[in-house]
Length: 307
Image (cartoon, rainbow, N blue to C red; front, side, top):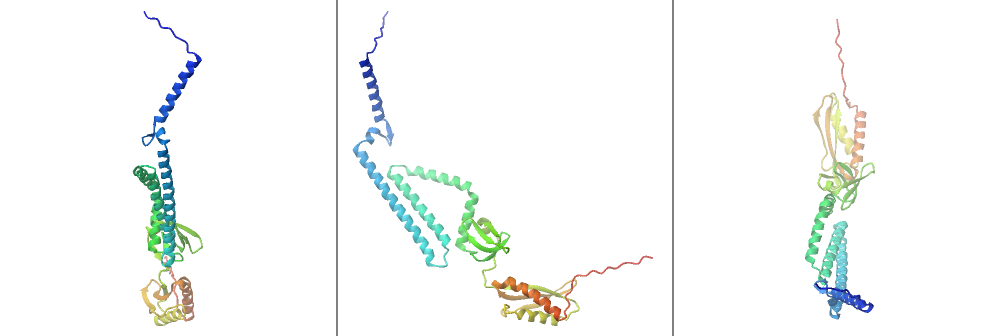
């Protein structure tokens, strides 16, 4: 049988033991891999510090060049739209912003590459994030896409009187997300661009002239020639009526209680609504003054006699 005895450590030996443990821990930390296969001792060498300083300086230079180039491209694209009045400023401002963000995005990738970061994985992460964001903002992005199409092809422009998505009014603004209208009661109407681009657009301001149309009914006992002359003279005596194309005034329908005249006359688009309302009143007054009967629906009641 073997006997073992414990020998108490003195204070000096205990200090030596603790010191050796600390040195071993420090050596482990210095030799542990920290970044790109390099340990802390490798990173603290003059060669590595000089390389890091060079990379940092290169990153600053790349950032400066990218920022300056993106700002210059943005200004050039915006100036291009201002040189031609037919080009839409909003569209070119939008395109200029996209170009600037693209340049800055590539600049950031170059900076990361300077520090040894694998940009392939970064691009993959950005692509996945972009897909997720696109699915989440599908409705908003469809409005933006429709806004770009509206600005690019210009089916409507500010100041036009239009009818879109069952709404009628004057176009006040066309943004990337929505189109602002002011209706006939001067009420603000906001229409999402996806509904504007995806529906039928009726633009009443595209052409300088419009054809006004009325239907006037006279009694069956009226002199049709006199009635036609009164209608024609009344309409054409107004300075807003155009002689060309030639006005159309003809009987087109024999109704239940009236003979109907169809009247078509061209006028300036800017005065269409007021002109049409004025002529309705003036023709009615002229027919009354000429003794032409304007019938209205009547009902004759026949009562049978009972014996």
